[in-house]
Length: 255
Image (tube, rainbow, N blue to C red; front, side, top):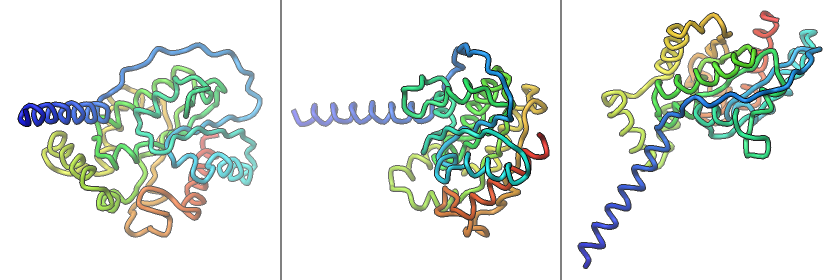
């Protein structure tokens, strides 16, 4: 009897583990586009989508003010989902407005540009460059379908190793397992993620249809710029000031 119970528990744990890894690492397919009405554009409109980096310090308000400081009047609106991977950020674009973290309204408001700030959670969870690039490409293609110019911020620099050391034993084991299966046991770097997206953009002939902003202008190395971060994953107030200046300056140049 005890042996049967043990076997059942092993099977249950195996199924739970399978579901966990499937949900974590599975890719989503391209969704069916929805229809939107025509909106007359009078002023410059800029949307922002992404993870917690979008909402922790009200990046939309910061950017709007930085643009105004440069004599550029723009309506800036944002939708951020704390903790979201690129997969969820893509899915949020198709959620109805009454659903949590829906960003469908960003498309419906038809901005001229949409800034994409994503990937930190992908890298922190060791999901791999292919996972990141696949879902970033879906986001980019969706924006282009609606005649919105994607402004892609390269995967931001953050304390990837420092964050790993803070994880619990299960999360550490999950990351290490991913390294074995996805990269022969080697840890992925932030540059690995960036390179995968650049390759996919080039292979799909989309590199000249987006605006790519290099986050290294804000911070090239986390370990030497910890004064810009509140923790290994997030910018602090000073970091947001520098980041919003970086975005405003680049948008001024492409306006």
